[in-house]
Every structure is written in structure tokens, then in C-alpha cells.
Image 1 (cartoon, rainbow, N blue to C red):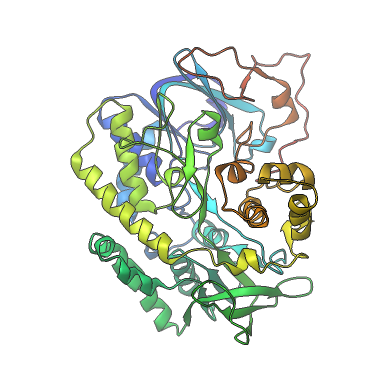
Image 2 (image 1 turned 90 degrees about the vertical axis):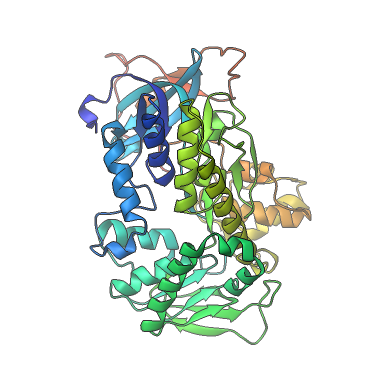
Length: 503
């Protein structure tokens, strides 16, 4: 590993892998095994990414696939540069130049590093997809991933009585981890119906291990007498200054609330999640083509070898479609082989196909319920940072003529606050599309994903940036790209304040 004290020097490698989660670790290990020189960059202080977070929870049962992680970490540890927040990716002399802010807090760091590589593997992961509902801005309402991160990284319980709600298989490990750590989980409200997996026998047959994992979680809920309610959802969070209870209602098969089924459940924390949103800042900076994924999120389009539409750039893991850690590892191995110019083993391609079928089946039985968009009240906040209500989003379409989420953003300031659309983007895109009478598009989601800088930066660092030189025909320059100027001299002192506010 490299310490921040010596990270201001440039590095050259055959392949730069961004992200040390399941996909990135696997890509780096495979590329190294194929004889390529590799540098592995990650913003965290250790390898593992969001999935293999570690450090706080002593129970290794919370970390599925730990043996795989241990092998990959051992193989790639000499390649890893921690605390490297990649801000920009730009074409550079037939390869790529990555500018990183180095340190635990990029918004306070004045240390940068430039990494140059001939090829890239982008394994940037994902974060919780959040959608607005009444009371979602109350303290105590948290993303499921945030609740799990506190537990796995720091051994901290977000609350003593936690309702877990949303849709998707991720709810189960969140609830199981809380129970194992001593919290009370009065119920798990699943908006979908996992029984629908029976309609996908081929996907089930090829992923028996994943079913076994799910049954293990279910058994843990049963031991703690935690109800698991299918086709149920939290429709309102209640409380004065912080969360005190939630209203839970039964949903019909169309995802609408059934009248007369609402009940109140006391809790001090709500862990809620509606799937995940791929992190695409760097793929979009590089100019990679995108598509709408099976779960309705924006994903990077890749071919059979995980290659993107841009020469010399591969993507793996959640950026190419939410599918879980096992799929991410397989995609990472494929991308690592291909980026190193080595043939991809057929067994990996077959395994990827099976895991993608299973992921597709999960998305089919865990859709986002319709009530979250169609029945959303005008007074609910669509953007919490800028305090923009849903009514303003709808008025931008109906009264001001907006036809996409990008225009809505300009008219209402949604997504222009601290989170830069990471929290509100999916919801605003969905409300905009519904008001326009159409499905969500790449343009809608891209409005909250494209950013000229992928990490916060101090004013001093921004003052040292200058436009990148003209690119060659093989690497068209995406609009708005920046690259660092040479180190500042005494005429350009570093200010102490920071302009980077988004997490």
C-alpha cells in the first residue's frame, strides 16, 4: 500500500483498476496473473468496498464470501493505493490520466496524485437508491446500506428498535445483521413477493447457493420471531423532531396501497432501501455509452468481455447492472483477463450468464412499487438538500414546459445541494417521467449522474485545474473534463476552506 505522504508522484501502469470492491479486486488479480502491471485505486482506507466492509463487527457470518475476499486481498495488496479519490479520467497520449485527491477526506485534502495507464477497468460500485415518501426527511430514517455500514465498519447499531423496509434481497442481511448485534427488528416489510422466483426455474437451478444464503437469513429472522411481511411497505414515517414510528400498509399486485390495511409500528430507526444506483461519474467522464438496466437504473453498456464503447476502457460489477457480489467477482475476472489481452475462460462466461439470469429474476420479483410515484403527495420533499417539494417538480412539467429531469433540475434546483442528486435523483427522475406520461429515460437519470468532478475538492485544488489538451481522434474529449495544472507556487496559496460538500 502507499501512504498519503508519498502519493504526489505520478504512476504509470498497463492497467489502472478503480475500485477495490469485489469486481475491482477480481479484475486486478486476473490482470496481474495475465502478466500486466496493475495499479488498484480505492477511496477507502482498506480493500473490500461496500460489500466486504470490515473492522467493527466481530461476527464473520456478516461477511459472506470472506474466503474469496481474503484470497483476492492477499493477491492484490501490493497493488493497492488506499485513500485515492479519483476526480477525473481523461485521455492522455493514447492512454488515460486519472487525477486523484489523496486522503481520508477529499474535501479537506491538498494532496493529489496522477496515475497514467494504457487501459482502465472501472469497478466503481453502487450506493442505496432512495425514493421520497412522507416523513423520509426525519432524523432516524436511514438507507439500509448506511445502517449496515455502521454495523460492519464500526460495530455501531443505528438504533435499538429498527424497522427494515423496501424491496429486494438486501433487506434480509440488513435485518439479520441487526438481530445478531442485539437490536430488535419488529418487522421486515418487503414490497415484492420472493415467491415469484418460482416462475424462473432456470435462474433458480443455476443459483442454489444464493437460495441457501437467503434461507439462512430467513431462519435467523424466524429464531428472533421477526415477521417478514411480503407485499407490505412503509407509507409514512411519523415523529416530531425525529422518527418515532412508521405506518405500514399492504400492497396489491400492482404495487398500490390497499385501503384499510395501514397500521403503526413504533421504532427509533427505519432502514429503507429500493435497490441500488450504480456509480457512473467516471464511466460518463470517459464517454462510455449507457443503457437502462433491468431494474430501471442507468448502467454502462458492455460487450461479452466487459468492454465499454470506449477503446481501452472496461467496466465490471454494479456499474454494468446491479447483480450482487458473486456476479461482480466474475465480471471483474473477465474484465481483468480482457484488459490484459488474455483469453477469457469459457467457464467464466457461462458462470456470468447464470448469475445474470438470477439477477434478472430478482429484479422481476422486486420492482419498485407504483404507489411511491403515482400516489406521492405534492407536499412531500422531492429534494431534501434544497427543500424542493414534489409539487415544484410537477409544476415544472405542467406549467413551465419541462420535458425531462435535466430541465426540471435547472428550474427547481433539485439535485444541486450537498448530495448532488445522489439521494434525490432517482425519485425526481421518476416523478418527472410520470408527470410527462412516459417511462424514465437515460437523459432523466443522467441529469443526476454526470459530474465534472467525481469527488469533492478544495478551492485551492480547483484553482489549479486547467482544461485538458485537445485529444486525438481515438479518444474524443467528453465535455467539461479537467486535468490538474502543475503544482502551485507561492502565488497560489491553498485556502483552508472547502467547496466540496457532497458526500
